[in-house]
Image 1 (cartoon, one colour):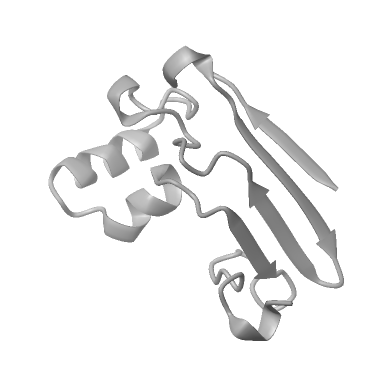
Image 2 (tube, one colour):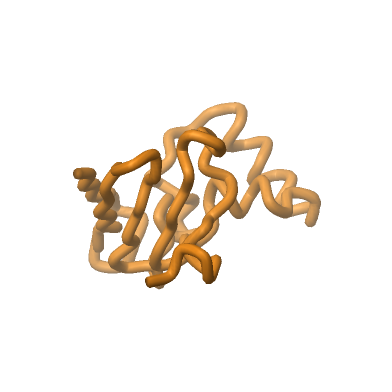
Length: 105
């Protein structure tokens, strides 16, 4: 079982970003309970739930220039409500299987 609450002053009313999940049978399932919120903090406040670093600066600068694309989205973009990953064949969790009909019950 996995539970995470991301809290910071980077969202209206200091609202958290709750995530629940489970790892079973070689799969990771994540449920983003408030997928309408920014997980790394709101853009207007500078994604305050992510510590400052050269990498953060580089990605945000690339995004301002329209060159970050998927890199920005993976780091700072909103998440879908449900995520499912095969952690045996996809240990980096890059392919979300939650919308694949083969995995929908």
